[in-house]
Image 1 (cartoon, rainbow, N blue to C red):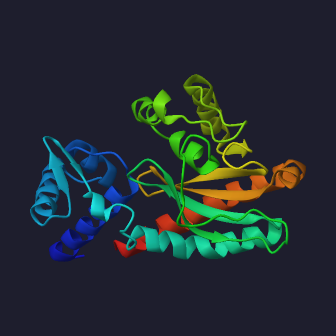
Image 2 (tube, rainbow, N blue to C red):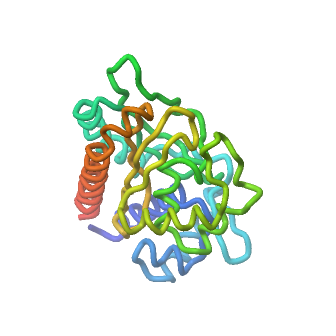
Length: 255
């Protein structure tokens, strides 16, 4: 790969990174996540600030609000393309609905795509509706991969609102759930965001090892309880498959 192509690829990698990481980042953080020298990261960041693609606040950088949630190219389009057949297979094998979601810049979970169950009684959800991070399985599995400082940002008491009688709003209890999710590699919720609906999610990782999305199987609660072990197996297998395929395609694209 020549220098000009490598520079173009790094610009795209940088923009894609900012769409998937909700908080502001400094030069060192960007360099570490992309695996590039700090000098190169600094040059790229300043170039994008100058062209209006990033905002700069002292020593940190972030996407402008108008670009958050609307940048659908690059890694997101690859993610959806790779995930779609996996989700369709999961929905067919389980008889339940599959979803893939990411954390937005506003600290909410956004579903990017879904494969809905063919059963008459099923769980379905809009792709346009944003969901809380602290009481959804995709939100919790993404939080579980974060640092304690990042977790604290999302578990401020004033942000933890009761949605159903089963919604957990105690930050300490949520932290215990996150530690267990990190150990297990998946997280389950039952009636915590939508009464009568339960689900399980597993993490999808990028090439640098950072979580970029969550994969979910959702079902009416009685059916979920009956088939939970099968659903856990399917969602963990599906997330691992998407992670492997996504990172394989990224490696091929940089050669």
